[in-house]
Length: 199
Ligand code: AMP
Picture 1 (cartoon, rainbow, N blue to C red):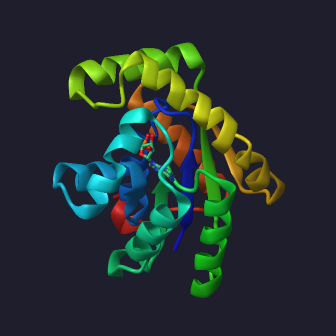
Picture 2: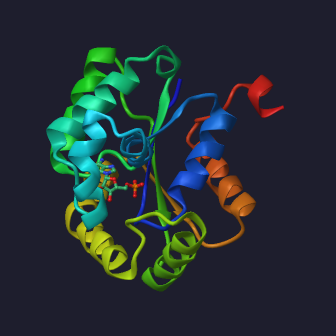
Picture 3: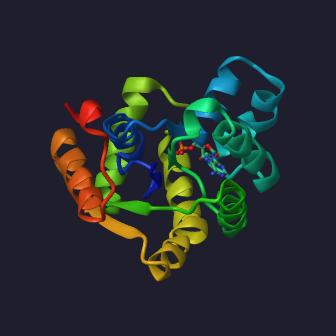
């Protein structure tokens, strides 16, 4: 029943790895960025409220983001654990998630920190812009998103490190290799998938 986070700068490969790790462990991968993008695509009320924010590379206000995560974690598939990708990103979100876990009578089990240097991250994001045409993958917005990450989110890692939760993983390398590193790191802390899922 692992409750996990994956953190790291935009472009470190969080989304790709989150899906693979979640599958191996039998928990849902919950990406706030994906949920926002889906809402924008479907032109929901939430989507309309956040379009300009995502396009500018800014953070969506905590109230909106927290409510969305609260609803998502209340769904049936998240009762056996979760892997959050791209949340929490602010101190307010960390406090909110602590409250959610407290109500569940649970705690975080581990925080995977994917490490990748800035040049590599910019290179990957530019490649993704060409492939997927994400509107927040222009060079100017990429740079801004990295700045926002460094200012708002990187310092939160220290909070999790103080709690002894952080597993640092080198995010550079083949996708399979990085997945194996993460699963090894988690297994070393006693976080493992059920044998039937791993088989
Ligand atoms: P991501 O796909 O995780 O890089 O997120 C893409 C964009 O969605 C971010 O640049 C923010 O505008 C927004 N976003 C995603 N997650 C959060 C969050 N936890 N808090 C605030 N904004 C978020």
